[in-house]
Length: 254
Image (cartoon, rainbow, N blue to C red; front, side, top):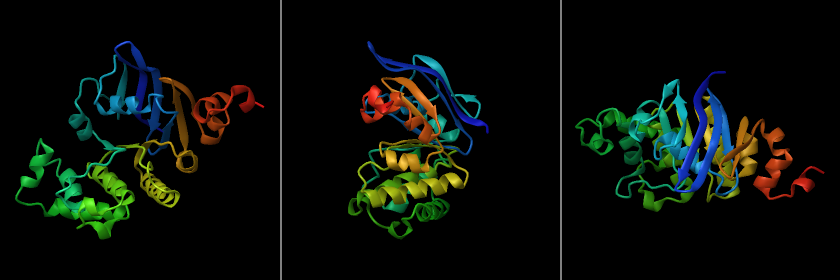
């Protein structure tokens, strides 16, 4: 397999606080990789470094062989990076399909808000409806976000990310706030997207679904990489269970 994302010795500090300390990992082409760890482990900081929201003080990040150093988020998106946020925030005055079409128009202009000012919007609207169908909410295309439950909004958020035609999709806790039926269904959708060839990096606290759908895990704790490998092997390690599940190391090793 070929590494699509390469993270090498990333270090991030906020003042005197070390948030990420020399973390390295790869996401292989076509992989569904889980990035897990307890609250405050540094997962979201790593994600923000990948997307360009924050700048690491050390290390490097490459996407499809391209060094992302110094590139703002919108240029990383144009190189094939897509992100689904944990806290969904669709435009409240636009329908679901308009929200996705706005993202689908990113190629037309340098600024996303200007995309809908184009006279011809039919291609973007058509693409948006296809993506909403793909993530299982095609029947809600003309609904306003304020009328929809969280589970549907999460799927619309994924459709918005897919509208950017990503090579790599970063999902930040997409299952958060969902009941077990909704979470399992959305996890199945993520698996289907991956099986269609999309590379996915998933940050998620729902360990049951992570274990079920991810082919490999990277575990971080206190800003450092603790382990990586197949899910069952990684979660069988005493140090991982101690950090992630709160077990005592000596008990976990028994």
